Image (tube, rainbow, N blue to C red; front, side, top):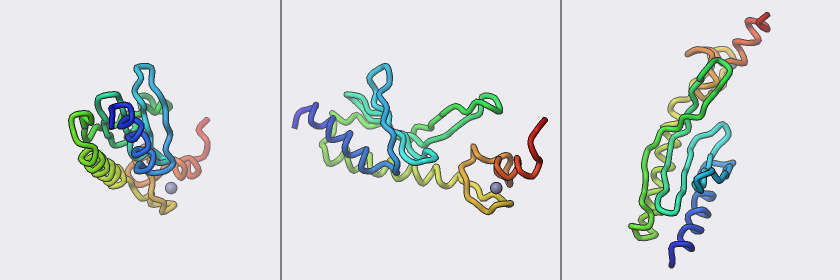
Amino acid sequence: MDAAARYEQLIAFLNAHLPRPVQQEELADGTFQFTGGSPGEVVARLTKASVAIEQYAVRWETPYTPVMRPRRVGLVRWRRLPESTVMNVVGQLIRGARDARLSRYVMCQLCGETKPPEWMEDHDVCQQCSASVLGPVH
Ligand SMILES: [Zn+2]
């Protein structure tokens, strides 16, 4: 199989194996970025030479500006490896990144829902509960 066909195959593989829903976006430098899960769980970046798998994470630049700051868990030079190895390794990296992300979720002590860390006001209370308990800020 030539490189173009393998590239297409990787796109299909990422779409099939990332947590749903999968959002696809082509960046200015030609990288294909996939974000799996809502809220996001795993990010994949595919180029003509490599595929990088990242754990989704958000950092607040200001209290109103969430910025996506994924943490890379692995990068595979897919053209240098046999197809089956690439699929195998990428599949495991996706699972690992997802487990790492989900392990950071926190249960809100007020509503009892499990939420990603960036939705928490502090360690115990989510932003939604915090807003409704404290009322709107004037
Ligand atoms: Zn809550």
